[in-house]
Length: 602
View (cartoon, rainbow, N blue to C red):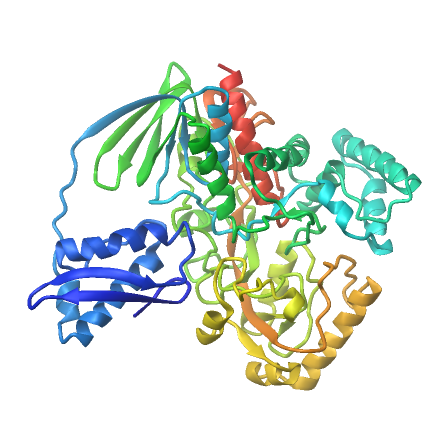
C-alpha cells in the first residue's frame, strides 16, 4: 500500500525467487484522467526494469510515487530489499529520431481550450494535430470543479431576492468607465424593465450582466471587448456542448468567487473531466481528423517570412518533432501557476509566491506557451495578476479532497465567520491568510455537502476515505465537530445560527452577503462536516495579448500571422481577479472561437 494523490493505492505483487513477476493496482482513489496513465504504465515498467527507480509520469507525480511506494511496501513484506530496488539504474534508450508532421492546424496543449479548438476546427474540415505535454488530456480543466459560467435558461429555476436585484441595479447605474460598459448597462436596464413587466420572480441574468460583473470583479482592468466576447460566447459554447451530448443540469449555482448563481455543471460527470470526454467522444463519433500526440513538449514556434508556420517539440523519449501548420498554430498551453520562478518574477500583489506556496494546478502548467509567444514578438499583458484560491488543501494545494459547498459557512480555527463567502477570490484569499495559520474550515450538512447519493464528492472521492485520511472531519453534532477541531462548541454553534438566519432572510447583516444557493442552510441534524482549506496559487490572469477572434497581437496591435491563442495562456479577459466559473467559460468559448477563426482566416 502507498499514499497516492487522493488516498491509499493498493497493489497486488507476484514474486518469484529472484524477480518481480507481476504488479497490478487493485484499488485506488486517484482522479480519472490524471491517474490513468501511471496506473497503466508504472506497474509494467517496474516489472520490465526490475527497478523502483522508474520515472514518474508527467502531470501525475503523486500517483506515480504512490504506486512505487505500494510496490516497495509489498517487497518489504515479502522479505525483499526495497531500498536496493530503488537504486537499480534504468538504462532507457534515448531516441535520436526526428519526425516531421503536417496538418492544417497545430494545437499546443490538450486541455479544455485546446480540445475545444481541435473539435471546432475539425468540424469545419481542417486536419488537426494536438501536441500534449503530459501523458493525458485535460490540463487544469480535469482538475477543476467542472463549473462553467454562462447566462442561460437555467437561471429560471432559481428565485430572485430583493438584495440580488439591488446588486443588479447598482452595477447597471454606476458611472461607466467607457462606452462598452455603458452599452452593457443600457442593455441590462432594458432587460430588467422587460423582466419586471413580465412579472417574473426567477433569478435575473444575462450575458451583459455577466460582463458587468466580470469587468467590475477585475477592477475594470480587463479589456472590455474581450470581456464582452467571452460572456456573449459562453452561452453558445454551452449549447454547442449540449448538442454534442453533454448533460448539463437544469439549474445553476454560485461557486466560490463567482458573485452570481450562473455556474453550470454536468449531471453525471465528476470534476471537469466531462468537458474533455465530450470532445474525445465527438472526435470518435464524427471521425474527425484530429491526431493527439502525448508526452511531447513544444519548445519553439517556427517563423517563416514573419508568419508562424509551425512548431518544434521534443518527446519524453528524446524524439524531436517538427510540426508544419498549413493554416495556423493555436497556443492552448495554460498559464504559469506551477512555475515558481516565473510567478516570483512577475508577482507584485502577494507577499510570497515562492516554493512554500502550493498550487492547485497540474505541475505541467509552467508558462511554456507564453515564453514561446513572447520570443516571436507577442505582447504580454497583466502578468502580475496572479490569483490565489482559498479552498485548497493546506498541504498539497489540491482541490479534490473536498467536501462542502465552498460558498457555505466558512469559519476560522476559533469557530468564527470572518468574510462574506461569496466575495471575490482575491478578497477571500487575503481574508483567509489573515486567519490563524492561514487555515479555515468549510462547514456543511447533508444538503450542502456536495456528496452524491453514494457518498462521493464532485471529484469522485468517497467521504469515508476522506475522513479516514484526515482530509475531512465528520460528526453527528456541531458540538462534537467543534471538539474535533479544537474550538469552543458554543462559538461554532452561534456562528452557524447567525449564518442560518442570514440564509433565511436573504441578507447577511454581518458581512453584507446577498447571494445564497438554494441549499445554503445548515440543517439542524447531522452528519456535519468540516473541510480544512487554505489559499494556493490557482490562476494567472496575465498572458499573451489577443483580439476577440483570438489572433495573437504584437505591442503595436498588429496580428502575428498564423498564431492564435485561447484559454489561460492569454491575458486581458479577467483584469486583476477572475470570477469563479469564468476559467471554463474562457477556455471553451475562446477555444471554440480559435478553432473557427484559424479555418475562416485561411
